[in-house]
Image 1: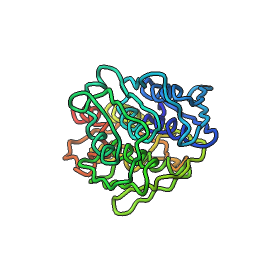
Image 2 (image 1 turned 60 degrees about the vertical axis):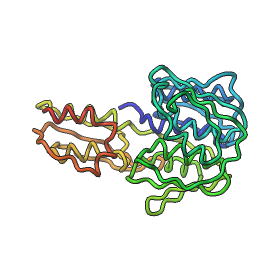
Image 3 (image 1 turned 90 degrees about the vertical axis):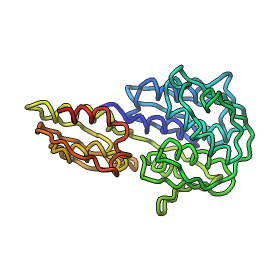
Image 4 (image 1 turned 135 degrees about the horizontal axis):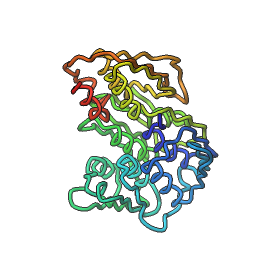
Length: 310
C-alpha cells in the first residue's frame, strides 16, 4: 500500500523545523504531500528525494524558515493548508497560502478562529476561504481551545501554532481524532501532554531531527479490505499498514459486518502501531454503525458504502 498521507505531510513539516537531518522512508509521493514539500523548499529548506518514497530533509530549526518569493500553492491539500496556517502564524515574515479552485472554495474559518484568538492576523476571502494572508511577526499567546467538532486538522493547527506561542497551548476534543501530530512531535523530542481528552504543548521548545518510517495508509488499504471481503475466493495480505487506534474504524466496522480480517506481525515503528492485515472473503451483514466508530473511519465511508451495498 502507498504511504500514509497524514504522516507524509507531517514528516516534511516537522523535519523542516527540526535541528539536523531527518530521513523519511515510505513517503507518499502524491500531489498533496509533494505540494507541502515544495512549500518548504520555497522557504529555504533543503529537501532531497532519493529512491522511491525516500526523502532527506535538512532542518533549519523552528525559527530558520525564510520568506518565500511568492504565495505558497498547496494544490488540493486541505491538510497542508490547515496545518501550514498554524505554522505560518508563528513566522516573522508575511505568508500567503493558496491552492487550486477546489481548495480555494473550502472554508477555513475553523482554523482562522483559534489562530486569531492566539493573536494571529489572518485575512481571507469571503466566508473564510483561501487565499489566506497571514501577517508575520505576531506575538502568539497560548490559549485553551475547545474544539466545536472533532477535527484532527484543527487540533493539529492549534498545537503547531502553540510551538511558537508564549506559555501553554491546549486543546480539548469532543471525540478522539487521529493523533499523528502528537506522536510525531514526541518522535522529534517535543513534549506533548494528554490528560482527560486535553492535549497541550509548551511553547519555546526545540525539535530534534530523527528518521521516520511512514507506514502504509489504512485509507488506501480500506479499498482492498472491502474488495477482498466481497469478492468470493479472495485471500489478501496487506503489509506494513498503520493501525493507529484513531484510524482503525474501517477494520472495526467491517468486522462487525462479519468480515474475516486478522492482524499479524503487530509492532511499533517510530511511535506508530503497524501490522500486516490478512483479509479473506466472507459474506457481510448489514449493521447499525456505532457512533463512536464514525470519527475513527471518517475518510473511509465512501468505500464502506460499497461494502454496505453488498
